[in-house]
Length: 82
View: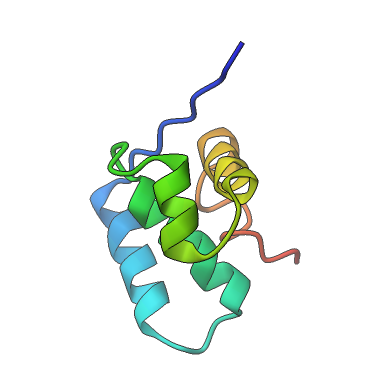
């Protein structure tokens, strides 16, 4: 059974991610995860295309999308482990 996690960002989430990626003061991992979510919004790109565009693996894309769908954007702010 293949599980598909659909990322559908609200306007506020999209603006937050856009602002996050435009400023260079964040960890590269956080910026990469934000870019993955922006590219995955409304199923705009496949896992393979997102992986190619962001320079990561398809498993990373899957995990970021799953975490967003299950826990939301506010939970840990894209994986800051604090």
